[in-house]
Image (cartoon, rainbow, N blue to C red; front, side, top):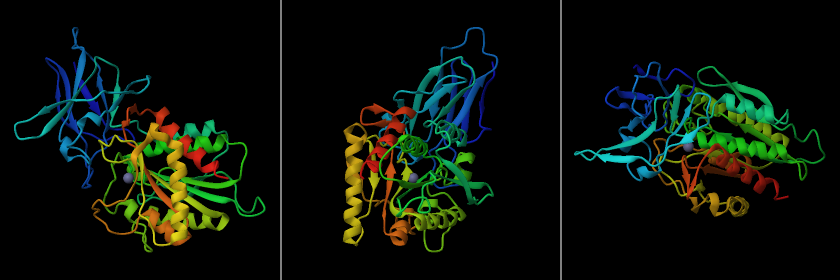
Length: 380
Ligand SMILES: [Zn+2]
């Protein structure tokens, strides 16, 4: 019996604290901060190449230091990782059993089928460039992918567009710009973007929109398995000042200016996921601005998005003000957009595991995205 953990694949993240072989098979692990102050994302594989003749029926997964993860410490019930045996579909684990240690720390435990072929375990469904590749194939050329610059580690950063801009039609089309993964580990944002892009590509009528999208804003962090919230050298979503503090931000700012020159900028959506245990549903962060006309336009967008999500997915408190402490009090993407283009910009947060009573799967995340697409495209 040789139970092993692997983390040598794109997006992987884990600190293995212990592997027990007998009498029960068990892996004790936590999320690796990868040099940042916050940790949360984990994604790793377990494999037992030579299970014993009478193996235990389950593998016990124990997550340590839950209280140190962003949003951890409360409601462990809503921390529900996913797992996938090689060649099979993803499944979500149910609520953990919680063991309290004498010093007040909590251990979260789940039981998984065992023995199994190589099995991947993650905080939530991973979303990598290959997943985007299959969306682009399904959309049969609707989306064009263009390189727009480099990441801070020298990878090519790409942006999608739907090929509609002022040069093609009389009058300027309305503009929509989408981003995901400013925080690398926030994979629900990518699944929602996947549904949004799919919904847009299926629309056959209505007013033309000039739609551009950056699917992996922190591509380096996505591939490295970083969580990315408040990551060093600078949180991507706090690097949006007039002098951008990350090269990715500089690249995307210049891309947005090209977009704004080809359309009438209407709306920018920035797709995120909140702390590990949020469960209320999808919500958005918005700080009301001082310009009353712009604020009315943003409120109108908030209303149509809220209406289309319905209580199936929308949190009861749908609009929230980003009042939490940040390590960098410098502009966010939404601040940059408002100041540069005067259009509406909203950050959308989609929980990892549960929206109300709905257990989230890629299908459910995509449904959130399709509803957002419908809300946007049906306005005119
Ligand atoms: Zn985020």
